[in-house]
Length: 406
Image (cartoon, rainbow, N blue to C red; front, top):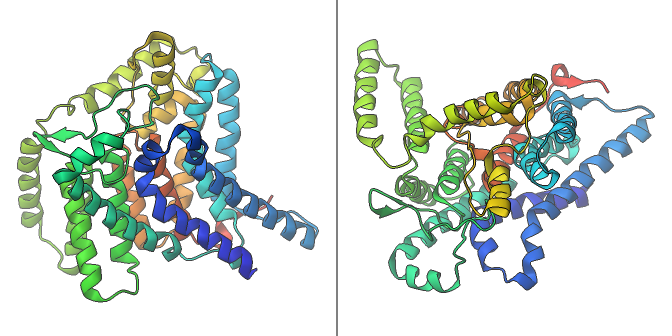
Protein backbone atom coordinates (compact mmCIF):
# COMPACT_ATOMS: atom_id res chain seq x y z
CA UNK A 1 0.00 0.00 0.00
CA UNK A 2 2.75 2.45 0.95
CA UNK A 3 4.73 1.51 -2.15
CA UNK A 4 1.81 2.19 -4.52
CA UNK A 5 1.02 5.45 -2.75
CA UNK A 6 4.66 6.47 -3.18
CA UNK A 7 4.56 5.56 -6.88
CA UNK A 8 1.39 7.63 -7.36
CA UNK A 9 2.98 10.57 -5.54
CA UNK A 10 6.03 10.36 -7.82
CA UNK A 11 3.80 10.26 -10.92
CA UNK A 12 1.89 13.36 -9.79
CA UNK A 13 5.12 15.13 -8.88
CA UNK A 14 6.62 14.43 -12.30
CA UNK A 15 3.50 15.76 -14.01
CA UNK A 16 3.67 18.94 -11.93
CA UNK A 17 7.35 19.48 -12.68
CA UNK A 18 7.40 18.64 -16.38
CA UNK A 19 4.08 19.80 -17.86
CA UNK A 20 5.01 23.53 -17.82
CA UNK A 21 8.18 22.64 -19.79
CA UNK A 22 6.44 20.47 -22.36
CA UNK A 23 7.20 22.78 -25.29
CA UNK A 24 10.86 23.18 -24.40
CA UNK A 25 11.34 19.43 -23.94
CA UNK A 26 9.64 18.70 -27.26
CA UNK A 27 11.91 20.92 -29.32
CA UNK A 28 15.14 20.18 -27.47
CA UNK A 29 15.07 16.41 -27.75
CA UNK A 30 17.01 15.14 -30.79
CA UNK A 31 15.29 12.80 -33.19
CA UNK A 32 17.28 9.88 -31.79
CA UNK A 33 15.51 10.44 -28.48
CA UNK A 34 12.12 11.40 -29.90
CA UNK A 35 10.48 8.47 -28.10
CA UNK A 36 11.07 10.33 -24.82
CA UNK A 37 8.44 12.82 -25.95
CA UNK A 38 5.92 10.15 -24.99
CA UNK A 39 6.75 10.55 -21.29
CA UNK A 40 3.22 11.79 -20.60
CA UNK A 41 1.64 8.76 -22.21
CA UNK A 42 3.98 6.42 -20.29
CA UNK A 43 3.05 7.99 -16.94
CA UNK A 44 -0.65 7.92 -17.81
CA UNK A 45 -0.43 4.24 -18.81
CA UNK A 46 1.22 3.44 -15.46
CA UNK A 47 -1.46 5.44 -13.64
CA UNK A 48 -4.22 3.57 -15.49
CA UNK A 49 -2.57 0.21 -14.83
CA UNK A 50 -2.45 0.94 -11.08
CA UNK A 51 -6.08 2.09 -10.98
CA UNK A 52 -7.32 -0.95 -12.94
CA UNK A 53 -5.23 -3.34 -10.87
CA UNK A 54 -6.54 -1.96 -7.59
CA UNK A 55 -10.13 -2.08 -8.80
CA UNK A 56 -9.81 -5.70 -9.92
CA UNK A 57 -8.05 -6.68 -6.69
CA UNK A 58 -10.79 -5.10 -4.58
CA UNK A 59 -13.52 -6.74 -6.68
CA UNK A 60 -11.89 -10.18 -6.37
CA UNK A 61 -11.43 -9.76 -2.63
CA UNK A 62 -15.08 -8.78 -2.16
CA UNK A 63 -16.25 -11.31 -4.79
CA UNK A 64 -18.28 -8.66 -6.58
CA UNK A 65 -17.68 -5.65 -8.79
CA UNK A 66 -17.00 -2.59 -6.68
CA UNK A 67 -19.05 0.60 -7.14
CA UNK A 68 -17.43 3.38 -9.12
CA UNK A 69 -17.90 7.16 -8.86
CA UNK A 70 -20.25 8.62 -11.42
CA UNK A 71 -17.36 10.69 -12.73
CA UNK A 72 -15.45 7.51 -13.58
CA UNK A 73 -18.46 5.92 -15.24
CA UNK A 74 -19.20 9.02 -17.30
CA UNK A 75 -15.59 9.24 -18.47
CA UNK A 76 -15.78 5.59 -19.55
CA UNK A 77 -19.06 6.26 -21.36
CA UNK A 78 -17.42 9.19 -23.12
CA UNK A 79 -14.57 6.90 -24.18
CA UNK A 80 -17.04 4.31 -25.51
CA UNK A 81 -18.98 6.99 -27.36
CA UNK A 82 -15.71 8.24 -28.80
CA UNK A 83 -15.24 4.74 -30.22
CA UNK A 84 -18.66 5.00 -31.86
CA UNK A 85 -17.75 8.39 -33.33
CA UNK A 86 -14.45 6.95 -34.58
CA UNK A 87 -16.24 4.12 -36.40
CA UNK A 88 -18.81 6.41 -38.02
CA UNK A 89 -16.65 9.37 -39.06
CA UNK A 90 -15.77 9.81 -42.76
CA UNK A 91 -12.37 11.29 -41.80
CA UNK A 92 -9.25 9.14 -42.26
CA UNK A 93 -8.65 7.13 -39.08
CA UNK A 94 -5.17 8.48 -38.07
CA UNK A 95 -6.49 12.03 -37.93
CA UNK A 96 -9.73 10.97 -36.23
CA UNK A 97 -7.73 9.13 -33.56
CA UNK A 98 -5.68 12.27 -32.95
CA UNK A 99 -8.88 14.28 -32.61
CA UNK A 100 -10.27 11.75 -30.12
CA UNK A 101 -7.08 12.01 -28.08
CA UNK A 102 -7.38 15.79 -27.85
CA UNK A 103 -11.04 15.62 -26.85
CA UNK A 104 -10.98 12.82 -24.29
CA UNK A 105 -7.49 12.60 -22.80
CA UNK A 106 -8.31 15.00 -19.96
CA UNK A 107 -11.70 13.47 -19.04
CA UNK A 108 -10.14 10.00 -19.15
CA UNK A 109 -7.39 11.08 -16.72
CA UNK A 110 -10.09 12.52 -14.45
CA UNK A 111 -11.95 9.20 -14.53
CA UNK A 112 -8.82 7.19 -13.73
CA UNK A 113 -7.90 9.34 -10.71
CA UNK A 114 -11.41 9.28 -9.26
CA UNK A 115 -11.47 5.48 -9.67
CA UNK A 116 -8.54 5.06 -7.25
CA UNK A 117 -9.57 3.62 -3.85
CA UNK A 118 -9.54 6.26 -1.07
CA UNK A 119 -6.57 4.62 0.67
CA UNK A 120 -4.43 5.21 -2.43
CA UNK A 121 -5.52 8.79 -3.09
CA UNK A 122 -2.58 11.16 -2.87
CA UNK A 123 -3.00 14.77 -1.68
CA UNK A 124 -3.35 17.58 -4.18
CA UNK A 125 -0.06 19.03 -2.94
CA UNK A 126 1.91 16.18 -4.56
CA UNK A 127 0.97 17.70 -7.92
CA UNK A 128 0.33 21.34 -7.08
CA UNK A 129 3.55 22.16 -5.20
CA UNK A 130 5.82 20.97 -8.07
CA UNK A 131 3.53 22.79 -10.52
CA UNK A 132 3.91 26.05 -8.58
CA UNK A 133 7.70 25.68 -8.48
CA UNK A 134 7.90 24.80 -12.16
CA UNK A 135 5.64 27.63 -13.37
CA UNK A 136 7.55 30.19 -11.28
CA UNK A 137 10.81 28.97 -12.83
CA UNK A 138 9.10 29.11 -16.22
CA UNK A 139 8.37 32.82 -15.74
CA UNK A 140 12.01 33.41 -14.77
CA UNK A 141 13.08 31.51 -17.88
CA UNK A 142 10.73 33.61 -19.99
CA UNK A 143 12.17 36.83 -18.59
CA UNK A 144 15.67 35.59 -19.43
CA UNK A 145 14.49 34.75 -22.95
CA UNK A 146 13.35 38.35 -23.40
CA UNK A 147 16.90 39.52 -22.76
CA UNK A 148 20.00 37.77 -24.03
CA UNK A 149 18.09 34.50 -24.18
CA UNK A 150 16.69 35.16 -27.66
CA UNK A 151 20.13 34.83 -29.21
CA UNK A 152 20.68 31.54 -27.41
CA UNK A 153 17.21 30.13 -27.98
CA UNK A 154 17.33 30.74 -31.72
CA UNK A 155 20.29 28.34 -31.97
CA UNK A 156 18.60 25.29 -30.49
CA UNK A 157 14.87 25.94 -30.71
CA UNK A 158 12.95 24.24 -33.49
CA UNK A 159 11.25 26.59 -35.99
CA UNK A 160 8.06 24.63 -35.23
CA UNK A 161 8.02 25.25 -31.50
CA UNK A 162 4.48 23.90 -31.18
CA UNK A 163 3.85 20.22 -31.85
CA UNK A 164 0.15 21.10 -32.21
CA UNK A 165 0.27 20.59 -35.97
CA UNK A 166 3.40 18.82 -37.31
CA UNK A 167 4.87 20.83 -40.15
CA UNK A 168 3.10 24.04 -39.17
CA UNK A 169 5.60 26.90 -39.05
CA UNK A 170 5.17 29.14 -36.03
CA UNK A 171 7.25 32.06 -34.74
CA UNK A 172 9.69 31.45 -31.92
CA UNK A 173 7.63 33.78 -29.76
CA UNK A 174 4.18 35.30 -30.21
CA UNK A 175 3.63 39.02 -29.93
CA UNK A 176 0.88 41.35 -28.75
CA UNK A 177 0.91 45.11 -29.23
CA UNK A 178 4.46 44.78 -30.54
CA UNK A 179 5.72 43.01 -27.40
CA UNK A 180 6.73 39.33 -27.03
CA UNK A 181 4.24 37.29 -24.99
CA UNK A 182 5.41 35.33 -21.96
CA UNK A 183 5.32 31.58 -22.61
CA UNK A 184 8.03 30.23 -20.31
CA UNK A 185 8.97 26.69 -21.28
CA UNK A 186 5.53 25.92 -22.71
CA UNK A 187 4.70 25.70 -26.40
CA UNK A 188 2.75 28.94 -26.41
CA UNK A 189 1.56 31.86 -24.25
CA UNK A 190 -2.06 30.71 -24.02
CA UNK A 191 -1.23 27.30 -22.56
CA UNK A 192 1.33 28.83 -20.20
CA UNK A 193 -1.02 31.56 -18.97
CA UNK A 194 -3.72 29.02 -18.09
CA UNK A 195 -1.20 26.83 -16.26
CA UNK A 196 -0.05 29.92 -14.34
CA UNK A 197 -3.70 30.49 -13.39
CA UNK A 198 -3.99 26.91 -12.06
CA UNK A 199 -0.74 27.32 -10.11
CA UNK A 200 -1.93 30.64 -8.66
CA UNK A 201 -5.19 28.97 -7.59
CA UNK A 202 -3.21 26.24 -5.84
CA UNK A 203 -0.90 28.78 -4.18
CA UNK A 204 -3.89 30.72 -2.80
CA UNK A 205 -6.25 27.92 -1.78
CA UNK A 206 -3.78 25.11 -1.03
CA UNK A 207 -0.60 26.97 -0.06
CA UNK A 208 2.58 24.94 0.43
CA UNK A 209 4.15 24.99 3.87
CA UNK A 210 6.60 27.69 2.94
CA UNK A 211 7.45 30.98 4.69
CA UNK A 212 4.92 33.71 4.01
CA UNK A 213 7.48 35.86 2.18
CA UNK A 214 8.24 33.00 -0.23
CA UNK A 215 4.57 32.38 -0.99
CA UNK A 216 4.08 36.10 -1.59
CA UNK A 217 7.08 36.23 -3.91
CA UNK A 218 5.81 33.25 -5.90
CA UNK A 219 2.38 34.87 -6.17
CA UNK A 220 3.90 38.08 -7.52
CA UNK A 221 5.96 36.13 -10.08
CA UNK A 222 2.90 34.16 -11.23
CA UNK A 223 0.84 37.35 -11.57
CA UNK A 224 3.69 38.95 -13.53
CA UNK A 225 3.75 35.96 -15.88
CA UNK A 226 0.00 36.14 -16.43
CA UNK A 227 0.21 39.85 -17.14
CA UNK A 228 3.08 39.49 -19.60
CA UNK A 229 1.37 36.62 -21.40
CA UNK A 230 -1.22 39.12 -22.68
CA UNK A 231 -3.86 36.38 -22.47
CA UNK A 232 -6.97 38.48 -21.92
CA UNK A 233 -9.31 35.61 -21.10
CA UNK A 234 -7.11 34.68 -18.13
CA UNK A 235 -6.98 38.34 -17.09
CA UNK A 236 -10.78 38.38 -17.08
CA UNK A 237 -11.14 35.25 -14.95
CA UNK A 238 -8.46 36.46 -12.55
CA UNK A 239 -10.29 39.78 -12.18
CA UNK A 240 -13.59 37.98 -11.52
CA UNK A 241 -11.97 35.76 -8.89
CA UNK A 242 -10.46 38.78 -7.17
CA UNK A 243 -13.75 40.65 -7.31
CA UNK A 244 -15.61 37.70 -5.80
CA UNK A 245 -13.09 37.38 -2.97
CA UNK A 246 -13.54 41.08 -2.26
CA UNK A 247 -17.33 40.70 -2.30
CA UNK A 248 -17.21 37.75 0.13
CA UNK A 249 -15.23 39.79 2.63
CA UNK A 250 -16.89 43.16 2.01
CA UNK A 251 -20.22 42.81 0.17
CA UNK A 252 -20.62 45.39 -2.59
CA UNK A 253 -23.69 47.54 -3.12
CA UNK A 254 -25.55 47.78 -6.41
CA UNK A 255 -24.02 51.11 -7.40
CA UNK A 256 -20.57 49.70 -6.73
CA UNK A 257 -21.27 46.71 -8.95
CA UNK A 258 -22.53 49.11 -11.62
CA UNK A 259 -19.34 51.17 -11.43
CA UNK A 260 -17.17 48.06 -11.67
CA UNK A 261 -19.09 46.80 -14.70
CA UNK A 262 -18.75 50.21 -16.36
CA UNK A 263 -15.00 50.29 -15.75
CA UNK A 264 -14.80 46.71 -17.00
CA UNK A 265 -16.62 47.62 -20.20
CA UNK A 266 -14.24 50.56 -20.76
CA UNK A 267 -11.24 48.31 -20.14
CA UNK A 268 -12.53 45.74 -22.62
CA UNK A 269 -12.99 48.44 -25.25
CA UNK A 270 -9.27 49.15 -24.91
CA UNK A 271 -8.16 45.51 -24.77
CA UNK A 272 -10.35 44.10 -27.53
CA UNK A 273 -8.79 45.79 -30.56
CA UNK A 274 -6.02 43.28 -31.28
CA UNK A 275 -5.21 41.04 -34.21
CA UNK A 276 -7.03 37.74 -33.80
CA UNK A 277 -9.85 39.07 -31.61
CA UNK A 278 -12.47 38.94 -34.36
CA UNK A 279 -11.37 35.37 -35.09
CA UNK A 280 -12.74 34.23 -31.74
CA UNK A 281 -16.15 35.49 -32.85
CA UNK A 282 -16.14 34.44 -36.49
CA UNK A 283 -14.48 31.03 -36.00
CA UNK A 284 -17.43 29.42 -34.14
CA UNK A 285 -19.81 30.76 -36.78
CA UNK A 286 -17.65 29.29 -39.55
CA UNK A 287 -17.54 25.91 -37.77
CA UNK A 288 -21.33 25.83 -37.42
CA UNK A 289 -21.71 26.62 -41.12
CA UNK A 290 -19.10 24.02 -42.07
CA UNK A 291 -20.82 21.34 -39.98
CA UNK A 292 -24.37 22.02 -41.13
CA UNK A 293 -23.30 21.96 -44.77
CA UNK A 294 -21.56 18.57 -44.54
CA UNK A 295 -23.26 16.63 -41.72
CA UNK A 296 -25.87 13.97 -42.36
CA UNK A 297 -28.89 13.76 -40.00
CA UNK A 298 -27.27 10.93 -38.05
CA UNK A 299 -24.06 12.92 -37.56
CA UNK A 300 -25.93 15.44 -35.45
CA UNK A 301 -25.89 12.65 -32.85
CA UNK A 302 -22.52 11.02 -33.58
CA UNK A 303 -20.59 14.06 -34.85
CA UNK A 304 -17.87 14.28 -37.50
CA UNK A 305 -14.75 13.33 -35.57
CA UNK A 306 -11.60 14.92 -36.98
CA UNK A 307 -13.42 17.32 -39.30
CA UNK A 308 -12.21 20.42 -37.42
CA UNK A 309 -9.40 21.40 -35.09
CA UNK A 310 -5.75 20.29 -35.01
CA UNK A 311 -6.54 16.90 -36.57
CA UNK A 312 -8.12 18.59 -39.58
CA UNK A 313 -5.10 20.86 -39.88
CA UNK A 314 -2.78 17.85 -39.77
CA UNK A 315 -4.72 16.26 -42.62
CA UNK A 316 -4.65 19.50 -44.61
CA UNK A 317 -0.89 19.80 -44.10
CA UNK A 318 -0.30 16.22 -45.22
CA UNK A 319 -2.60 16.30 -48.24
CA UNK A 320 -2.64 19.93 -49.37
CA UNK A 321 0.47 21.53 -47.85
CA UNK A 322 -1.59 24.10 -45.94
CA UNK A 323 -2.78 24.25 -42.36
CA UNK A 324 -6.12 25.83 -43.20
CA UNK A 325 -8.98 24.08 -41.40
CA UNK A 326 -11.86 25.26 -39.18
CA UNK A 327 -11.15 25.82 -35.47
CA UNK A 328 -14.14 26.11 -33.11
CA UNK A 329 -12.45 28.36 -30.51
CA UNK A 330 -15.06 26.94 -28.10
CA UNK A 331 -14.67 23.63 -26.27
CA UNK A 332 -18.39 22.86 -26.15
CA UNK A 333 -18.95 23.57 -29.83
CA UNK A 334 -15.86 21.48 -30.58
CA UNK A 335 -17.35 18.53 -28.67
CA UNK A 336 -20.73 18.96 -30.35
CA UNK A 337 -19.29 18.96 -33.86
CA UNK A 338 -16.86 16.07 -33.31
CA UNK A 339 -18.81 13.86 -30.89
CA UNK A 340 -22.35 14.94 -31.68
CA UNK A 341 -25.23 15.75 -29.37
CA UNK A 342 -24.75 12.57 -27.33
CA UNK A 343 -21.09 13.36 -26.72
CA UNK A 344 -21.92 16.91 -25.66
CA UNK A 345 -24.57 15.66 -23.22
CA UNK A 346 -22.12 13.18 -21.66
CA UNK A 347 -19.46 15.90 -21.35
CA UNK A 348 -21.88 18.27 -19.60
CA UNK A 349 -22.94 15.49 -17.22
CA UNK A 350 -19.28 14.72 -16.46
CA UNK A 351 -18.53 18.34 -15.59
CA UNK A 352 -21.69 18.58 -13.45
CA UNK A 353 -20.91 15.43 -11.48
CA UNK A 354 -17.33 16.63 -11.01
CA UNK A 355 -18.58 19.98 -9.75
CA UNK A 356 -20.79 18.26 -7.18
CA UNK A 357 -17.83 16.33 -5.76
CA UNK A 358 -15.51 19.33 -5.33
CA UNK A 359 -14.90 21.59 -2.38
CA UNK A 360 -15.88 25.23 -2.81
CA UNK A 361 -12.38 26.37 -3.80
CA UNK A 362 -12.07 23.72 -6.51
CA UNK A 363 -15.58 24.56 -7.70
CA UNK A 364 -14.29 28.08 -8.32
CA UNK A 365 -11.50 26.68 -10.49
CA UNK A 366 -13.98 24.64 -12.50
CA UNK A 367 -16.37 27.59 -12.95
CA UNK A 368 -13.49 29.78 -14.09
CA UNK A 369 -12.66 27.25 -16.76
CA UNK A 370 -16.30 27.02 -17.80
CA UNK A 371 -15.91 30.65 -18.85
CA UNK A 372 -12.51 30.05 -20.43
CA UNK A 373 -13.71 27.06 -22.46
CA UNK A 374 -16.14 29.36 -24.25
CA UNK A 375 -13.26 31.50 -25.52
CA UNK A 376 -10.88 28.90 -26.97
CA UNK A 377 -10.47 25.16 -27.56
CA UNK A 378 -8.18 24.94 -24.56
CA UNK A 379 -7.85 21.19 -24.30
CA UNK A 380 -6.24 20.83 -27.70
CA UNK A 381 -3.18 21.84 -25.67
CA UNK A 382 -2.25 18.59 -23.91
CA UNK A 383 -0.19 20.06 -21.02
CA UNK A 384 -3.02 22.42 -20.11
CA UNK A 385 -5.64 19.67 -20.39
CA UNK A 386 -3.64 17.37 -18.10
CA UNK A 387 -2.89 20.14 -15.59
CA UNK A 388 -6.56 21.10 -15.27
CA UNK A 389 -8.01 17.62 -15.03
CA UNK A 390 -5.27 16.40 -12.67
CA UNK A 391 -6.06 19.31 -10.34
CA UNK A 392 -9.78 18.47 -10.47
CA UNK A 393 -9.23 14.74 -10.02
CA UNK A 394 -7.01 15.18 -6.96
CA UNK A 395 -9.53 17.64 -5.48
CA UNK A 396 -12.52 15.33 -6.05
CA UNK A 397 -13.97 13.56 -3.04
CA UNK A 398 -16.84 11.19 -3.93
CA UNK A 399 -19.63 10.62 -1.45
CA UNK A 400 -22.03 7.69 -1.24
CA UNK A 401 -24.67 9.55 -3.26
CA UNK A 402 -22.09 10.13 -5.99
CA UNK A 403 -21.12 6.49 -6.42
CA UNK A 404 -22.89 4.29 -8.94
CA UNK A 405 -23.19 0.50 -8.69
CA UNK A 406 -21.55 -1.53 -11.43
